Amino acid sequence: MLTLLKLLKDGRFHSGQALGAALGISRSAVWKQLQRLEADLNLSIHKVRGRGYQLAAPLELLEQAQLADSPYPVFIHESLDSTNAEAMRQIAAGMQSPFAVVAEQQSAGRGRRGRKWVSPFAENIYYSLVLRIEGGMRQLEGLSLIVGLAVLNTLRDFGGRSAGLKWPNDVLVGNKKIAGILLELLGDPADVCHVVVGIGINVNMIVASEVDQSWTSVRLESGCTINRNDLIVDLGRKLQGYLVRHESEGFAAIQAEWESNHLWQGRAVTLIAGAHTVDGVVIGVDQQGALRLGVAGQEKVFSGGELSLRLRHDS
Ligand code: ATP
Ligand code: BTN
Image (tube, rainbow, N blue to C red; front, side, top):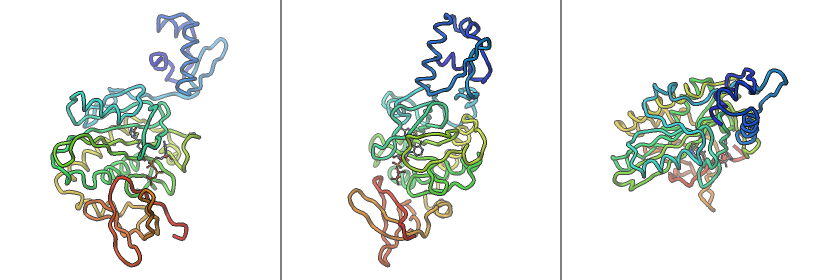
């Protein structure tokens, strides 16, 4: 099916006969594959008598050759349950780190606490970078925050100029989510372990009725269709830059830069920790990347993967 899509991706008309000849199949088999493309990948294909078939819009697919400048080896998949899940399977199978896994679509893209990450075909970036951590907890401190900075700077390169960060792991434009980050660990964090840095970036998506909160994409913000291969290479470089700094200097060296990009500095928020909530005002983050909140005149520090922030209506 992907071979047929590669023939059609230029957005021009192709006759059923030419497509059949290129694939070595009959015209009716071409017709069946086209129907599957429309149904499975949610693509719109124009059919015009006498001219043939044309994708409603040209499509740029992920291409190994275009990812050659990535600082990490990148494994491309047409479809996965989740790039994080595939990365974990590869670690278990003994794949050498670092490496990255990307997919054109995910059937079970995941966010924090089992939430779903909506992942339509060939529109966005679903990227998981695997790192081997040998420095124990220090190397993990603030890791998801520096990944946020790498994603933010990549988005800025591609026209997402007004994006900012929300502690601990979101990238927003105003109150609209443009990217999410999910770190998952395999092994013993106090000793040697692997961390899967999962990054979802809304790139060319313009419609997504299944996303149940405000969202946007780089294309919606910049007005331009973005080459996802270029964005992946840039993302790899930005990640590498921040990871090298983080490893040698720790999060403390990046704390001020993170705070200057935090959209909710000084805002009145509610922190949600399971069934408990705490009202406070955001002071910033500490040298480990934990959240500092002013609560009833006192500073309190919060960290952990299960925490969520919401703006208070009176802020
Ligand atoms: P918090 O991070 O503060 O806990 P959150 O609502 O952003 O809150 P996450 O677990 O970080 O929760 O992200 C998952 C949520 O993101 C989903 O529940 C859904 O509302 C939203 N979401 C899913 N897919 C997308 C997407 N492609 N773009 C933007 N948002 C999405
Ligand atoms: C969040 O905001 O909750 C995090 C969303 C993370 C989504 C990315 S997409 C690539 C990687 N694979 C997944 O299944 N999830 C992450």
